[in-house]
Image (cartoon, rainbow, N blue to C red; front, side):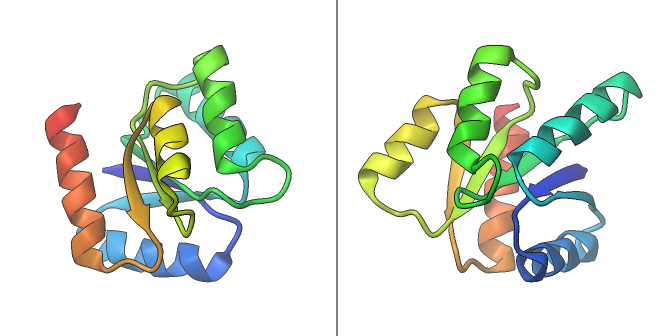
Length: 125
């Protein structure tokens, strides 16, 4: 699978990239929602499929919820989005899911948790 990791932390990206590579997946990195939109559009133009987006909530320029709101209105992608965040209030989870996030992972998480969510996404989509 080709997975876009959207997180402003290089450390988080490095950790997730390692987990993904150990299972044979490839990853792309965007440090915020604006860069994610740019990467998605580039991949759409080149017919390179992104299978899953792992999206942080708290980022500069365009945060995860702003990305979901933009995508909800503009339909940049239909790729399933998994929120991966420290935001754990019921209101936050409800907000992300109402904006078409498919799943939600709480940071910090293990490789097992990540791949359970990715497996669920594969079954749903």
